[in-house]
Image 1 (tube, helix red, strand yellow):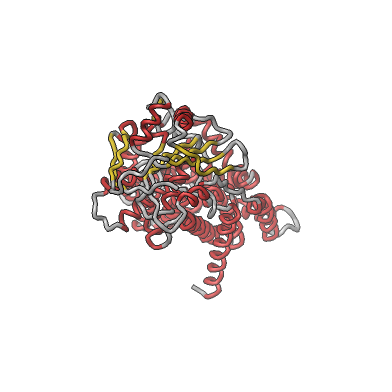
Image 2 (image 1 turned 135 degrees about the vertical axis):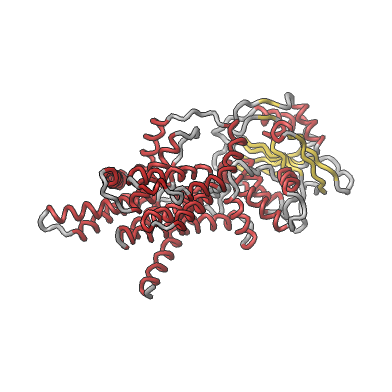
Length: 549
């Protein structure tokens, strides 16, 4: 590779690193709490695998996982495929096991994906247009969202695009190893997140659109066979876990329009229209036997496959699910812009194709570039301050903590606790698991403790040393939290308010209550939590608990 080209690629890579770092720092991602239930579940599940390996793999995985869940009940192993959590575990064995460290891993995935966009773009369009597409991609609102959060969407899109590149090479070179690599990368994508199953349709769509007779060969189906064999069983396993929580009925026609609208809103309608025209022209060329360029054909197939797949998925539509489509749309738009510029140069006197292309690229930058300057800040809920206070001091502090939140605070709190101590140490008990029960999505809610007295007796029986109560102004107080507050108020001699974190909204706060009972014997004791309603049994752990301050 010529030295000039190496320098150009290095410059592009550094520009993408700077852009992604700007987004993460601008959003305050490295100092904010993990938001929503998915972030904390991804983070804690990765820590589980990391700590199991770091402990020397001396226990059975199931026994270790059960004990770990008792300490940090935000493990979601099986709800998602394991590859993202395995990668997170490997990363945190080398680098610090902290949220900023994992966010750096996520950011690296976005950089690599942007770099793939550039490499593909420069071979199918031009270096200048490719750079525009890559920078626009990392500036998209959804890319900003997933690179400032501990989510698997960047990694699944990255693996999807590695698979797409391999399939385009297979169509171009007819090499069996490219079909195999499509299966390998596709399996990695499916083992990262289930929505990568859309890749299974890409080869078939390219064959149907391009009238490719290779569909009759065994090599053509090799990649699909690998994906089904390697990743298929895990998809079935995951479905057995989450199917009871799926309450939506897919609406294909409505969902298709929603996803197309999301994509257009992301990249801007001018870019979306140009990309759509290019997609239609590419598909038309294939259908009439003109053999479109393999890369463009594969991008079109990916777009149709991903949107079509999610039209039938019974989940609330989200732009995160179609992140892998965004690079295809941008590259197709670049191709369409070059096609339009060439047509204008041929039919309009005095118009030069290069200048027209530059003007279209500038318009695209203006259309999307404002998003890069207006990165939304990630919310901070105060759990860093609360856990910093709770675990202050040089001596190790072990607690048995009941966490109760009217929103998504449990996951934020558990994540903060896990990063502030030698794991597994303190025991965190979730009030929504022991005082009530419901499905994974909050449906079929039922109280397990009916009165404040029953709640108070439960606190004594565990025994709980610290209670952390989070209330958000915009959310209704759940019934089990209302009973908990009544139980604490009814026994002021047993519980005292020791710390309050007030958020900007005066009606939103986190309160920490500590038990005032005399410390029991210093020997280690067994903590048992009845999890029959969520895990089908009880979990126990032997801990030595520090008396709260």
